[in-house]
Length: 104
Image 1 (cartoon, rainbow, N blue to C red):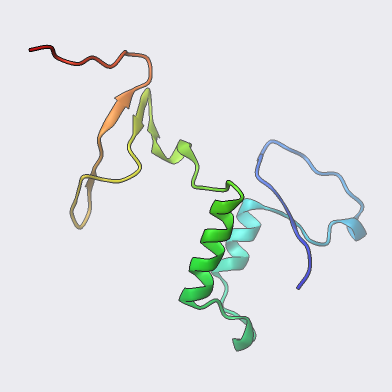
Image 2: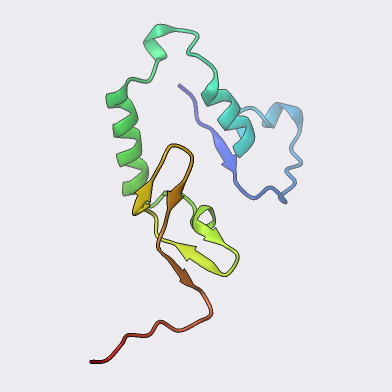
């Protein structure tokens, strides 16, 4: 196993000599690598390994991006309240309009 660096800002331009680029990746490169089957069965990630990786990432503050849950000025709740085979319904909040509550 070796160390790796991942740059998440797609506008960032990394200008390193070729010999210093080993282990430096973009998000797209990492996703592509992770989609490839394991070359060695001993390196295959099991469901248990996957849960442990997710827990470790959560502990250090890495989570899914809020951008995935933003549609125009609306911020969607992370969990759908109803789903179907080709759709999902989310509760959303407008980012610029105040929330209001009704009074009896």
